[in-house]
Image (cartoon, rainbow, N blue to C red; front, side, top):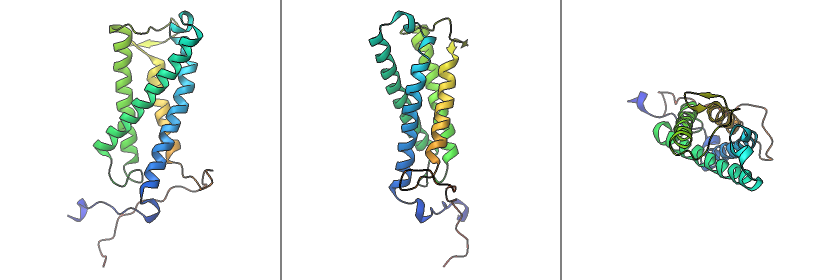
Length: 178
């Protein structure tokens, strides 16, 4: 049964502050990255030439908010399925891979649903398309969450600047303990 026991979490990683700080940093990266991405890839959609300035602003804000909700939902689902009480010190990669997969899967489905079925939006001739899905949103849902998970795990000092050393590692409890 010793092999089934979970590993102890170092004192420096216990409590709410570490997972909460990691989650906040991840969602901040998602928000910032998607705001920039949504703005820059507007020319890949027909709204770029057909929409008013107000419609373009609304589209960027609306889509960025949706991206944040997709990322949050994907992260929570990943934590439910593969996370444990030691996250983010443990199972960080597993959670990240699953969260990115959920976000990517939803994005591919949503792009298909909204371009082919509902016709809520359309790609411009500038959008590269593979299997009916725009390449830009697919790359977006790999690159931004990947960067977000990388940045969220970087250790921070109390003053908010990055630390120069790596995170403490989680070690197994020895079998000979009193």
